Image (cartoon, rainbow, N blue to C red; front, side, top):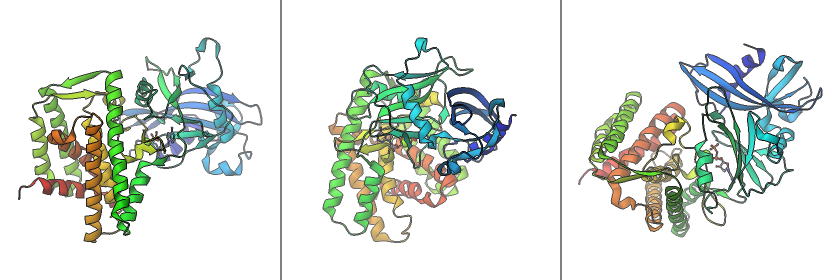
Length: 461
Ligand SMILES: Nc1ncnc2c1ncn2[C@@H]1O[C@H](COP(=O)(O)OP(=O)(O)O)[C@@H](O)[C@H]1O
Ligand SMILES: [Mg+2]
């Protein structure tokens, strides 16, 4: 192992976007290196590296933008991004760092899209979509927050989302955004970066360039602000105003689903396939119950919801869907809701994420998110029944408004498919239980309470 690989093996598992947390990293190697800038002895240099990380019999690929400069020349504001000092690719010792934070270097990424490389045969290619108008010159400012990837914002014009974990083939985020190009409900895609990587017959998407949507509020921020003000005694009118937003989000979701079904393949689930889906839900429930004993008291009722689902006599249409749909994936500029991040559930293998699915799975995802927005604020107020009641009413109103909007917008009427919707929602909540138990034990109450109240609501009398 060269020195740089050793440094990266320590640094990689500590990154927020590293998806194999908690499992020892056995091997790390640099799978490919693409030099984007070599500024001479004074630096800085910029390399795009693809790393291969081996953990317990599996290997995953990650992308990093590696900056390097002569030792002691790293600007003070970049000190915390340092990975270490080493000989980079056999050259002189350099300080290496995460270049996503270095605006001097990130500006270059956008400019590369406007280079016309004759032949375009390089291993790494910067591609633009027909008709895309790029405005270069602005530095790429790193978006901070709880993200699974790393996004850079260029002025008020573009966002470059660099995918951290890489999978062979086209990234679903790029695929779906391109299919939706021209829709007012997505951020217009402008281009992408792709690479030919060893062992992948098709190019791998490294990054996606989109139009930046300025002055937009995040759906999760809007929803939780609304719950917070309600709990602090705000009027019902304020709550009702958000329910209108929820209804509009439902309509927008239906429009996006319709566009996806018109431009990408669709199918219908056979009875056997529905039964297989239910079977997989049962397995996930068993796995979660084994790890989280609090789930056991509801397991029987959840199982019976899955059993009802396995007997649904169809037809259940399938199509490409968002796949990881929640309030944190939608933003609200003045023009209406805009959907982001069509990558699907990032920890799932990409071939599963690209599978056709019933659109109610996204509806269920958003319904869970309304429960989360209400339940999250109760974490700090245990044993306050009045607050709990208000938060639950808030969630119910917004869930209903969203479903109404979805049906009004031409989507499958969720009220007419309650058995499937319920199974999808339980399946998502069970996934959340496992996630919270592993990552944020003080949030565990949120999905557990939802399961408990859904179970209670289904018990006759
Ligand atoms: N085109 C855009 N315009 C405005 N904000 C954006 C845009 N794309 C992403 N963002 C902001 O960045 C956040 C993360 O983007 P997202 O695509 O969800 O990445 P991740 O996969 O890291 O979650 C979004 O929640 C949003 O706040
Ligand atoms: Mg996201």
